[in-house]
Amino acid sequence: MMRVIDLRGSDWKSVVDFYDAIGRAQYEYDGRAVANVRNINGLLELLVWNVPGQGNPPYAIRVSGLTHLPNKIRDEVSLVQQLLVKARKESISRRGFDVEVHFEIAR
Image 1: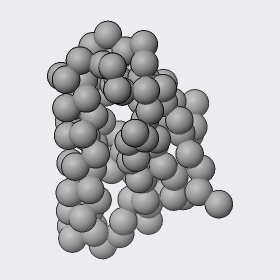
Image 2 (image 1 turned 60 degrees about the vertical axis):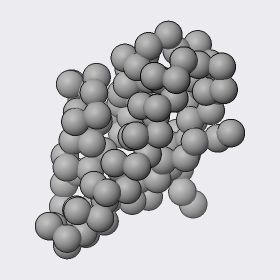
Image 3 (image 1 turned 60 degrees about the horizontal axis):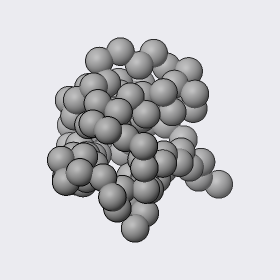
Image 4 (image 1 turned 30 degrees about the horizontal axis):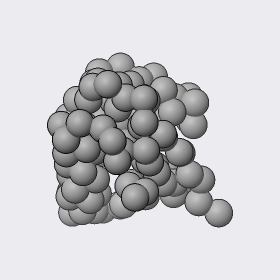
């Protein structure tokens, strides 16, 4: 069964709040240190490029509560979703394995 990390964004005031929430949830999920996860590069490093060996158990990050947030935050969440898909494909191409982390935006 795929594990799901649920993030509720309704109280986020900035993009940094989004990255902090993912960093905390990731630490609680697998105990890895969460340094430098305050931007897209740090997040992709954590979710895709710092995964050792043959990947990780599949899991999903589900983000909800974005409806009333500023466009800047919603746009960043969408960008993360898009770039994560690209990074996973690049991982397969460069390293020969997929990092099975899915990113869902609940409407």
